[in-house]
Amino acid sequence: MKFSVAIGKFIGLRHNSTVRAMTGAFALRVGITVVNLALVTLAARMLSRHDFGTYSMLFSAAGLLSVVATFGQQIFIMRAWSEFGSAGDENMLKGAMTFSAAACIAGAVLVGLPFFLWFAAEHETILALSATLYLVCYSLMLTSAHVTRSAVGVGVGDGLTYLLVAVCPIVYLIGCYVLGISIEIHRIFLAMAGASAFTVLVQMTMLRRRVQVLYPTMGRAGSTFELRTWIARSAKLWVSAALEAANQYADVVIIGYLTTPSIAGAYFVTTRIANAFAMATGAVYIFSTRHFPNLYYNRQYRQLDSLLDSVALVTLTIVVGGLLVVLGGGHWILYAFNPDYVSYYGALALLTAGTAAVAASGPSGSILMLTGHEGRYLAIIGGTVLMRAVGFFVLIPLFGIPGAVGATTISFITMALLLRSSAIGATGIDGSVLRLLRRRRRSMALPVE
Image (cartoon, rainbow, N blue to C red; front, side, top):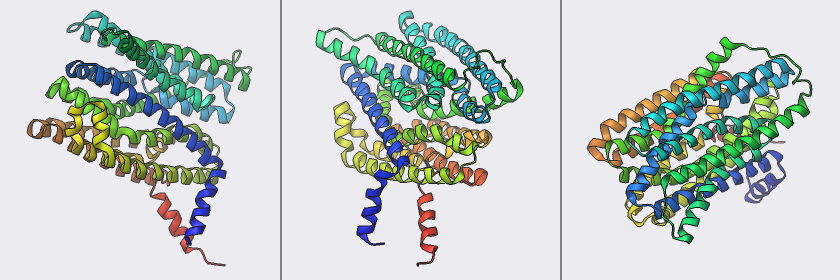
């Protein structure tokens, strides 16, 4: 292919509606990532290393348990909205929404109350209460964000969700710096809890309006329930989501337990930077879960194939650019958080390889969950989380942080390979960036006119 032709095709991508929408999702993820990194940077700079480590461990524990408290309703309600909405079955859709709301409330109570009692036994009551409020409100918001993304749009479903929760504590930290007021960790969690509660109210209001437009008779319609099927499906999704959250949050808690809060805080910063590839993964997740179910359940396979090609192209661009930025400027990025963290550059480089592999797998995990193959996804996530946990308890006592980084990177790469192969085997759909190679081989095999 001539260089000028390649450039012309690349420029022509701006006319592709899928690429434009994907770029919008990516831009949103960039904004979310920047704001969250700003929050971590301010906290790392303004708190002592011990206090920042304590905040990191508590934030990670609350984040993990907030996902557990959703009881698997994030993906369940998205799938129900597309599946029953496409079939025009208002009774089933109303029943599914009622079931999901009840499960979310039950999960918030059953997880939040033990968390408060456990944490209040060894820490200040006000800190335990604030963290628990954040856990409960954030858990409810996770589910409301997912259904709002499908029903209303990405901007309300994700933009409002993740931006506001980070902006509010940033305002508090900046206010403390300007006014010379000492920072209290519990107020950071109160700010995030308040932002989460406000977001839920806004999203539920907009969802109600959307339902009234699409299904004006739903208020008078009866509710149909398939409790046995929904409970079984939610259970698989619940365990999968919990294990996926463990991949993101549990390592900081385990490292804090095996070492010290200060070291856990340093590792927390390193993982936040390496997880910049979550911009790619998050953008792909937001976009694919917004459009994939509708295309799949309406059997629009040609459009689905085109969508995944565009997603893979954008993802590949992000992965390559991210590797160059993180590996090339890692020293300066770590220095921006805290000069003491520069020595963790080697750990950052290794973690970056693992997170890049996960990003390159694309929406393979979402493909499995949204097409009824929750069991396969659960087995993969469960196996890699177990591999990672065993690696932590074996390698951290021997090698410290390098051992933790090695275990994490190996588990990430293994997970990426297994998700891709399983998605292809179960559905025949390759959601990874490697689908671009197959597309290129197919085009080269076509006869030249």
